[in-house]
Length: 627
Image (cartoon, rainbow, N blue to C red; front, side, top):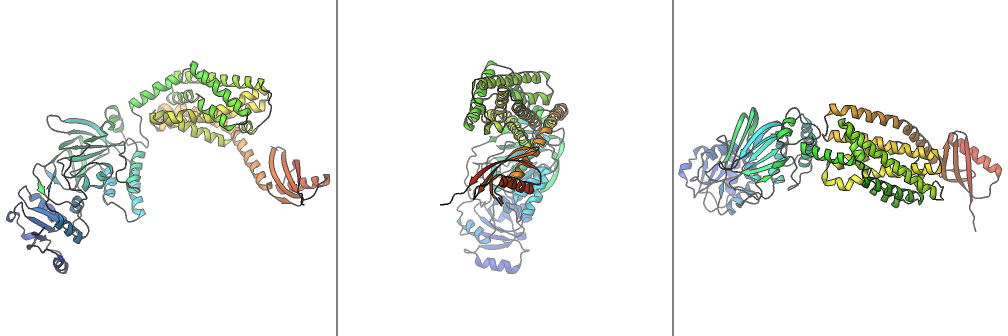
């Protein structure tokens, strides 16, 4: 700009003004204090460079019209709202260079809300304003500040009913929704939260931009808050609970009066009318892109907004920690689970084949083969159906699921027993031994499998990848081992494997029921009885597991105490615990010389001195030979 007038705040320090004035090249035609400014002295062809504060700037913008001069802001100690709105650089030198390089100042869209000028943003909703204000800073000076703001997201949040009408009068659309809060701006580029989540939107489009936050759980708010407060990523995926509208006109109504903040000033109303003013004014913006362009997306995620029954449910009380399942989600899942609870020929055939594969894999001591059987097994379906039936006290679903599980288990036992009877093998390999001594670790696996199975069934997009695996890992191998125990006539093997089978079944049903409850597929009052029964059965099963886990810990301790230990007669290796009552050990002694019977007695005494208890010992002697 070769010709311009500088308007400055008369309250600025004289030394600061004089020092800056000397740097201006080209120099202004005039330097006028703000109090002496008269817009009527200038035409639309003139340019005013403003070194003023927010209050003065807002006062000036209120007077602008299409015939007013173009205005350009310089950073000022008290220019915060307008600096954020127009992207004014922190450096006066940088702002002055951008001012000089701009050939023509394009028209600027002004947002009007109930006939009041909105220069930055409209914020509706107290909870939303906490999140929004923190993002507006762009970054935080220290972690403590971030954490203090993040904690506010855990406060009780209540959704409010809103009626939103947008579009032209002839083709207006209406939404009756529940929302935590609403954000509105005239330019996406002037607001950090819009820039981060809304892509392909430019400046001066003649449209206002609105974001509606309608989370269905506190967890979704916390996740969104962490992403934007701690790990902000520009252009990251828009969350499901965030909806976006760009339009020329929009009305927000509510039956009850609601609070809102217009450019930071808090007020209350039960109706707000938002529109882009038809009058265009010339205000320079300092954003990276100032080209007029058409927004590619006018609406996003509007179908995800809570309406109808879900709207009524979410506005009855405070927002739950986890989201409630929608009516459609519940209907689809319940229909699927009813189908899965039925005993079909396909189910029985797959059950028989998976058990056959698992049994052959166990005899072959082949982990890959056993895994193949796990993937093929169909037991996930009826057990997840049982979990839902127990949760919702649905007698028919529970009955059908139990019958289907019973036939699946019976088929598995029969086919595993038949393979055992015709196989001339009677050896306890590692694959079989690992499934006849269940403990608390196996219960943990069952619980995680139950959570994974229920979560997979409730999410259609991942059901195909998790549904067949989560349960099979826990159930098919012990079922086959129980059948092997019957074929051998070894009741210790049978009961050990069957206990693992029962442990997994109880843990999975309880965990899946609880997962469905947290996902909102049943109210707690209805689910309470089923959960108590599931937990009771789980407690009964847990008792022997605690004893088994205690033995496992004792065995591990003995192995740690003796394995690799040097005693006068040699080095102990390959320590195995055969029994605990009394203690029976299998130990290999690596000695430098041959040992006799007296040495063996001394070795037994030396081991008993280490573990402080009587021991029955099986010794294997290894003698080092030197050339």
